[in-house]
Structure formats: C-alpha cells, structure tokens
Length: 470
Image 1 (spheres, rainbow, N blue to C red):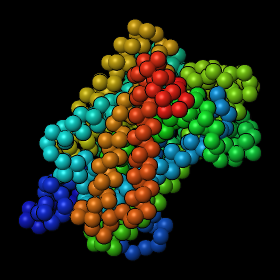
Image 2 (image 1 turned 90 degrees about the vertical axis):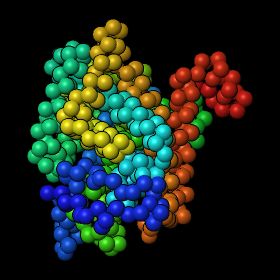
Image 3 (image 1 turned 30 degrees about the vertical axis):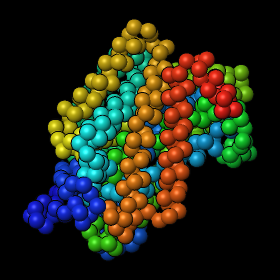
C-alpha cells in the first residue's frame, strides 16, 4: 500500500526554502507511490531486483512503431552507416533518463509536478497542452503500428484494426488492478518477445559482422550527404520521447527506499543502472531493425523500402525463410501493445502533475485513444492504407515539437542547487546535458523547418548558410 500522507505541517516545505515557486503537492501516481519495498539490507543483486522494472517501461518508448519507419529507411538506403546515429541518440537518452531519476528521487516530484511548482499558471497550461499533443501523437503511432501488425498477421483492414485497439483500455485497467509489479512483468515479457523475434531475424539475415562494427563508428559522411543527414534527424527525433521524461521521474517513486541522503543516493544509483540496462536493450532492438533492413534490402535492389508493410512483404521472399515476415509482424504488434501500457501511465502523470486534476485511468485512456483513432481512421479511410507511413512520420514531427519543452525544464531543475541540494548536477553532467539538449532542439527545429517550409525558401535559406538542403 502507498504511504499515508503525514500531517500537512510535516510534509509541506516552504517554497523559499526549497527553491520551488509553490509548495510540494500530492504524490505522483498515488495509488502505487512507494508501494514496492526495497530491502534495507541485502546483496547488490537483491536490491537491483527490487529497483529493476521502471527502466523497461521507459525503454518501451524507444522501440515503439514510430521508430520502425526511420530505422527501416536508414538501413535500406545507407546500409550500416547510420548505426552510429542510433547509438549516439541512445546515449543521449540514457543521460536524460538518468536526470529524470535524479529529479524524481531527490525532490519527490515528477517532471510535470516540478513544472507546476516552478512556473506561472499560463506557462503551466502551455506546457500541459503541448505534452497532451505529444502523448496523442505517440498514441497515434501505437494505434497505427498495432493496426498494421493485426493486418499483416490476420488480414484485418487497418481501419478496423485502429478501432480494435480501443479494446486495450480493458487490458490496461485489468493490469493496473493487479499491481505495478504485474504491469512491469507484462512489459518485460513483451520486450523479450520483440528481442527474440529480431534475434531470429538477424540469424536468418546473417549480416556482415565487420560491416556492423564499422557502422557504429561515426563518419563525416553523415553530415555531408543531405539525404543521410535527413534520415539521421528522423532517427534522432524518433528516439527521445518527451513523455518518457515525465513517466520516468514518476515511476521511480514506486520504490519504498529510505528518505535520507544515503537512501536517495543509493536509489539513484540502482534506478540509473536499471534504466541504462533497459535502454541498451532498446539500442539492440533499434539497431537490429536497421541491421536487418540493411542486410536484406540495401544490397538486394530494394533501397527504396521505407514502409513497414513493404518490409514485411519482402522479408520472407528475400531471405528465403517463410517465418521471417511473421516474426517481423509479431514484433510490431508486441511493440504497439507495449507502448499502450506506458502511454496510459504517462497521460495520467501529465494531467495530475500539471493540473493537480485526476480522473479514472480507464477514462483518461479512452479519451487519449479516441483522439488518436479519429485522425487515423479518417485519413486511412479517405486516402487509403498507403498513408500509414505518412501518419507515423507526422506523429514524430508532433513529438519533435514538444521535446525541447520537456528537456529544457529538466536540465534547469536538475542543475539548480536550491531545488536539488546535494544532488545538483556536476559541471560535466551539466555540460553534457545542455549539449544534448541543444543538439536535440536544433535538429528537431530543422526537422520542423524541412517539413513545413516551402521547398524554394528552404533551399535558399540553406544556401545562405552553406548547408545541404533537403
């Protein structure tokens, strides 16, 4: 059971003493707050087991269907070269998720609550609206990805597959009633399923080990080749998910660790190990998609493969293995359903954190899924199923718009001694963090610029800067 709130005088700190504009509010995810006991004494592995789990919920966002199109396109067009981009973006994610762990454990606030306790009301509403749009966009990718998986496996039209995804509201409600550990176990099981599917795919594809190793070495060609740079920006934009920053800073508080300095420091250490290990697994999944695409399509005359359906249709004939396409579809369906669980939690955290307003989780999920399903069904129904890839790309553009507005407050809060105390970022962490934030913001601004600016104006602008124009 979560802790009962102590008397108000003992729990509410004065804002002037803590560096926050407002007093501390309610617990994040109160129904599971500090519900998982951490042993005070015990071996490293026993404590690691107690802290393990939240990192895998976060890792789900780094291997959702929105990543698949960019990884497939990168491998098919450029072979193994963009593996370096996948690796660098993953390292950026590891750093940002570590900062989320620090914020949640050190302050007892998730990122949304921290924004509410720092910014003025108009800013809070602005950030909340942007975050809700990002969650809806992410949910759109999950809807489309799951629908494509259902179509590939069972022949269900994508429009009806989108409608069927509404039923996962019942699954989410059932899992939440079973307890947070059960949610974590289901997520891990689905991640293992995805990993197993791609392990078999790589075994069938037999990629060049030397080529793969060289692909992880960054090259200046990525910056010089305008098409390669554009796909690289897409990979970076699809990797770091803004809602994961809110999610992680909350779910690390499900562990009942000592509230002393030593207890918090230990909790940060184990939670960081958990998230780093989980994100390295996400690196394997994203790398595997790109490696598979490179090994199967790049050297076989199919460099133009970018749509998930095309990859599915070509896998088995190209590899000569009948089960290859089916494994690909199973992994896609597992990816979409896994993202459903974490999307529900993120939506609840954001609404409660920014507005201090709570509604029933299943109703919150139904609203979010409805927002995602309506445009998906309308566009696919009107234009046809060949627009699914464009929908996935559009969802990543919306996510890109919100990302900077999540990274900036995270860096500001964790770098401020008045808010973090002894857990304030060190100089080198601040340098790495702000550099990461700057890279993400600049690249995503470029992605937005390239998406919405007319071609002539875009080429003229890049020409003045001496940069390649997409």
